[in-house]
Amino acid sequence: MDPLDLLQRKSPKMPKIWPYIRFSSEEQKRGDSLRRQKELIARFSARPEIVAEGAQIDESLNLNDLGVSGYTGKNLLKGRFKAFLDAVDSGVVKAGDYLAVEALNRITRLNPLESLPIILRLVQEKGVRIAITSSSQIYQRGDDISALYIAIGELQRGYKESQEKGMRVKEAWNSKKRRAADFGEIATSRVPLWLSVDSIKLESGGIKRVIKEIDTRVAVVKEIFRLSDSNIGAVATARILTERGVPTFTRENARKNSNYGDFWQVTYVRKILANRAVLGNYQPMQWLEVGGKRTRVKHCSEIEGYFPQIIARELFDRVQIKKDARKIEGQGNKGLRFSNLFTKIAFCSACGAVAHHVNKGKDQKKGGRYLVCYRAKYGSCSYKSWKYEKVEAMLLSYLAEADIKSIMRDEDKVELLVNERYKIESERVAIGEMLDNFKLNFKELKGRVSNIERELAIENEARLAEIKSQ
Image: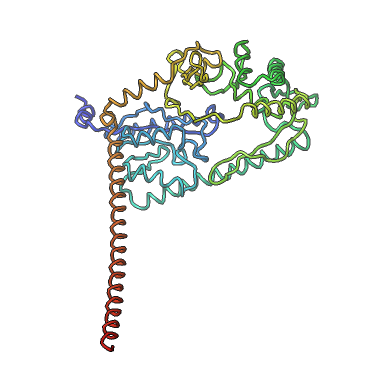
């Protein structure tokens, strides 16, 4: 028998290697970054001491943040690294497992004051070993202070590199915007979806970029404005376009989502109606950190005549006035607010889209509240509805009979007990404060009684003395 196989059989708790790959841009995906990171992880897993330990690569969590920024911390909030942190907290990733990553700056490029606690929590608190595949460094629980210094240095280097790169990109982008305002140059290939950027070869041999209309899409935008000018709202417009089979506007790299793509969104119709790009105006924007959050703000004043104008100013202004008027007419007291228990947890069994709440009014025959497939609302799925009250009653009836504690995770039970302990402790403190207040009040009352008794005694002595003198 193979000695390694025997070793692995005798070691039921063999660690896993969780590979994490991240890069910031789509250009890096087409380059060498992905291949290099994968190769380094494979080399690490083949190291003799790792093989002897019986560690195996586990890719079940799909820890690939491709085209996700580490400088903004996006991968920590909702990327695949967030999924890794959740897996650590839930116990899927266990103490002793490896997180294999090319460098610490692949995990995060945040300020070390923000990023170091994340690393320390994984290593010291959770016992996860972080393997830096581009070197022989492994950060693990019990490391001496020198390992901490190395980690801080690596995090600081990644943060400074991103800062400097960000400044260079920002300066280049600002320069493009200035040239767009001063000379009409095309600042970016990202334009409204009814337009495209084409390159024209000049006689001098140079290349000039120009913005052109996409005729079929421009016609759709004009129709949206015509419908709005006829007092047809965004909801009805979205349904009309979907029922007519008008193709939606999508980019090549549009997100994959069952709720989007093949039918018109009300929110997008509203964005088109409010977008001043139809007048030919371009509003340069920039990202700034405001109150610890990245916020998109105006970079400078609008650049007029940057895009081809496809809607007359009179029509645009008239549509805005009519939209505002429809908002006012639709306002008023809607009564008690309705709470939908099924928000983001109920789905259509036919297409998988989210089930939305629809209120058809108070009419006893045709009214009521229903759950309806989100795509069906816009004509992209069969329109089937479920009476909200019945679904809610069935769920609440089930929950009333279910033993909730039996299906809770152990960590949830611990949290429940901790919360109960805090509740009891709070009550104990409150009772203690009440007793202290009672003691103070009792002491004060006792003092007042003593004063009254003393005053009465003095008064009685005075009266006795007066009687004796008579």
